[in-house]
Amino acid sequence: MKAYLIDEIRPPEHEKLKVYLDEHLERAVMDSLYRVPIADDLLNETQRDHTDCQPFFFSLELTPASLHCELLVRTNNRMRCDCIGYATEGQRNWLVDVIDAIFEKLDIKT
Image 1 (cartoon, helix red, strand yellow):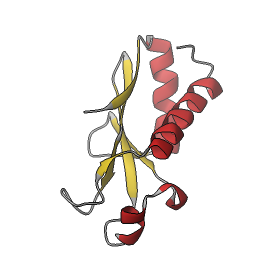
Image 2: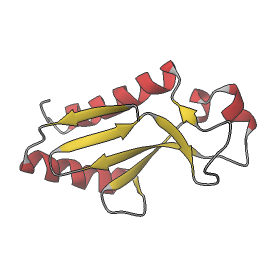
Image 3: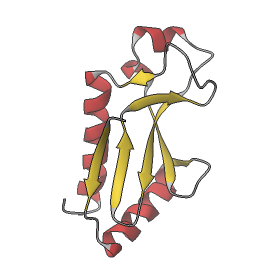
C-alpha cells in the first residue's frame, strides 16, 4: 500500500492530533481510523462520472506513535470499481498539504 507516513509522534502530540481529528474529520468504524473527503474538483474523470460511488475519501490511521495516510482513493459504496485506485499526483499533493497544514496549525514538529 502506498502511503504518507509521519512517525515518531510523542504522546502529547498524539493527544493534540487525536482531539483535532476527532473534531474535524469523520471517523471510520474503528476509533483510530478517519476519513478525509476529497473535493469534487480533485476527482479524476472516472471518479467524476461515477456519481453512485461518491463521495470519495482518503483513510488515515492514527496510532500512538504515527499517522498513516493511505494514498488510495476509496468509496463507501463499493469494494471494487474502476474509480477506486491510487491518488493522482494532484490528489496526493493535496493530501500531503492538508496533513502538513494540520501539523503546522497544531505546532507539531516532524
